[in-house]
Image 1: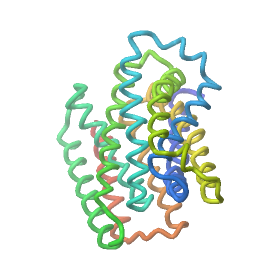
Image 2: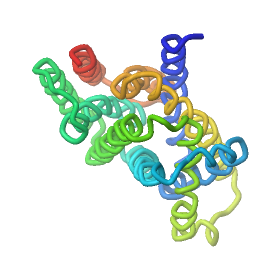
Image 3: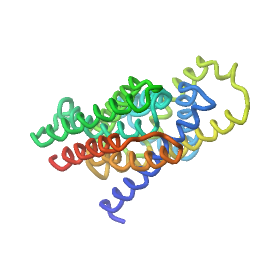
Image 4: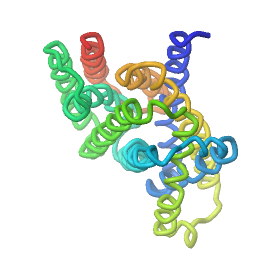
Length: 290
């Protein structure tokens, strides 16, 4: 399988895996707090990755560690908690649609911080996407008055973190393989994640019930498949393609997430679906004009 075929295969697999992660987070939050979901997800992932990829740490040179630490924080640590809190406040399908802002932010911060060129058509695409985002949030607040749509801003912040992550990997970690980057991330995050879990009173208050048992199962799937395996595939895709192509996995994630949301009984109006389409159209324009 050549590089072109590999990157498209990774794109499809990641769309299915990450599109399903939003509903898994939602279910995990029934028995755990957002802090506990985020911290446990990172610790389980770290355990899994060290089992399968400990030897890859040898390939990380001294010059790499600075950027491994930066991308671990911006691409994993903070977004994991931001999404867990966001899905506690808004529907999982809405969070997935808003996550489509990642390619916008990848491009914008790539141009402003990493020195990529900027075209007029891309600016048009960004403005169209922002209009779609505004419609999605305002209509969601109207349709679900019991939900706090300020939580949507957490998804936007997380998408900015993802944008810095993918640009940094492409520019500064291009000579390091995907498994080494991913294992390095979670070695760095193990201690902070454990401290966060400890301060959440998990060890003193956790009780084994039907809800918490299922919640731990959902977190384990999120950790091993949705974070561990998926991160390796994503970092490999970044190496095989451009940062914007890699971030474009968010084209398909909302489709999978919306399907799960509808199955789970979440409310989505025709206008919201249209707004999601507007966002994706804007993303397409940005990617097409690069």
